[in-house]
Image (cartoon, rainbow, N blue to C red; front, top):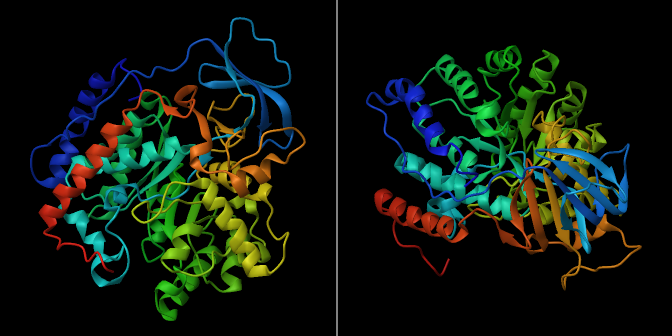
Length: 485
């Protein structure tokens, strides 16, 4: 979906390069997932000028610009200001819109997207019981699920995601998910999970191989590779490997009320232990860490490790009140906290709702009206998320020299308010919803314009997802749903 220049050739090359690894992982010959539909969506050439919008740059040195312009050339932002003169540029009229950096997700199990309509609660249909479905996935199911998630994210203003791929079982599954990310046109960090029945060195070698084959010009510098781990015995060797190879590393922390206190306590003990040993740092991204002790958050603050919080699923799981207030009280700067979709099996890709959830959870916890304000929520959704993924030098703010990942949100919809002298941060966090996303640009490439997808066959993506779920349920022999539950 991101162009017709060399997609088929690149896929063929990738299949050949990974054939040996797939054979090693599966004990047989490589098999390829069927290619997804792709439509023309070439990157814009020349100059583009986004003109006369309310620009929230998220760059402290530039600030907000009412009636501002953003000049883009190719994949990069060239200038931000008022009344920019760019002869011959394509003009995107940004009147009655708020222009801001694309949203950055920091933790999303994208492979679970096709479970929608199944997940609720209990021992059969709960999220964790349904994880057994990974045993029935084909590589094509991984492709379809990740494509489904990525397109939903793009339509809602997400330009960067962290695909926390903890459901993969083979290199073929990894390849399928990476191909979906590439085809969709989104920017992503692919979290490489240890493979079933394989020792960590094998998984690490795969991570390096995937980085060699996928990062950089292959996917227009949109894809990076990170490592997934847990906070147990393997953490020390995993984090040293990540540091030696310049990779980010992620792990789930405490899940709050979902597990007995002893389990949560063990997670806290591990975080404190690794922080004291110097094995937590800016390359480490810890997920959730809900309901932890104050000393745990203090250890995170001292280490410089990043946190990813998911207000929607932390509420529905239920884990407890998302700990923005607890973390900040212990000294964790908001600059080190990112926001997470987590699972669209039981929620939606809606950063506006996630930001509202963060603001509301913080005020509920503190009973103080200004313990979090809309501008802080937007920072976590953009620049904070970029810092969490090690991408702050590329995205997260509309800064000249950074990648052109830009979103325009309409203010003339019934749930919004056009006009001058209004606070755009309040409109974004308190009022906006994905339907207000007018334009989305990733790396200078328009994937949504005037509220409609560009170069993406959304109907095909939805139909493929529904068909994949039907076939998955048949293979797994799931019983009919109890529709009265």
